[in-house]
Image (cartoon, rainbow, N blue to C red; front, side, top):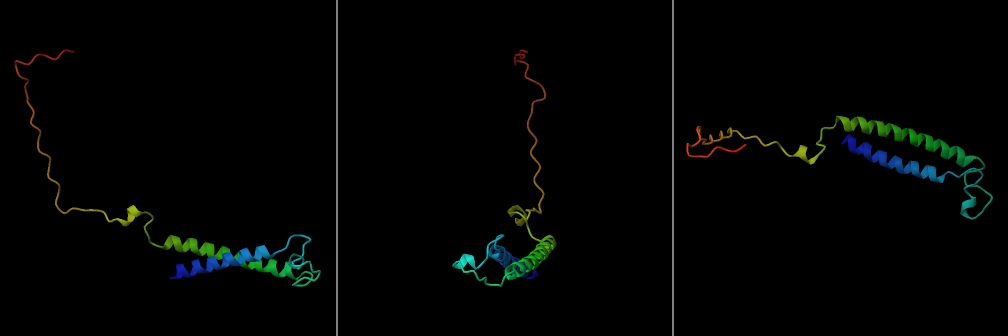
Length: 117
């Protein structure tokens, strides 16, 4: 249950971080210029840089914490990593029958010719 909640929080934080990074403007560009060429900015003269950079730092810190906690929780979870691990081992209660002894001749027949080397 906790693992699922941390995964959901992690995905939400990922989208927040993507949005915060994409909303930041490059050097010399204003966010208002991209929406119609207005000289007035949406957040003020230095508003978007401070607000969005602080938001990015905060979201990145939460992202690192959720990543670290997911790594710890994943290690503590007990689950099979492959399909082979999911299949239970077959154990038989009765021991296997011993193989029958092979019939062999102890002496070659007297009429048989000797094998050439």
